[in-house]
Image 1 (spheres, rainbow, N blue to C red):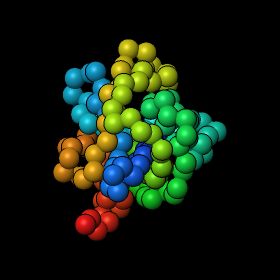
Image 2 (cartoon, rainbow, N blue to C red):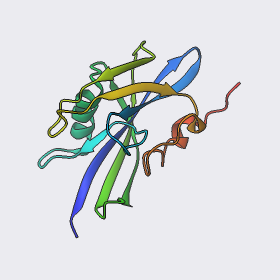
Image 3 (cartoon, one colour):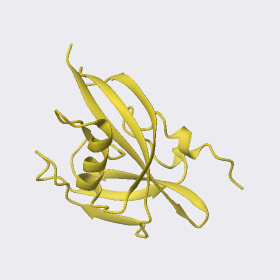
Length: 142
């Protein structure tokens, strides 16, 4: 069975003393709310892939990789087995929402609408995208 490697980015910022995570919706039906992610290309490490994919998908240029927070195998609904790498990245982005046209292959007609969430309950993420979000948002809130 072929395994496809995917690098996911949980991009966070602190806004008004609250940790927020970047999510997006795209202009195609049924994609759901997602976190930025992409395929690890041949000859590329997962770390290199997450750096490249976050720039391609978000347009953000000042991201800092903090840590690999999880890796696993996931049976994607398409039938493909994915080896997933979830990274925590931080941003100093001040915009609360924006749109970006991703620059990766086969994404020419897509437009991503980005915004921030502060709790897992703020958005129902696409299957598999929120699997490790609790590791970032589990901090005690005042």
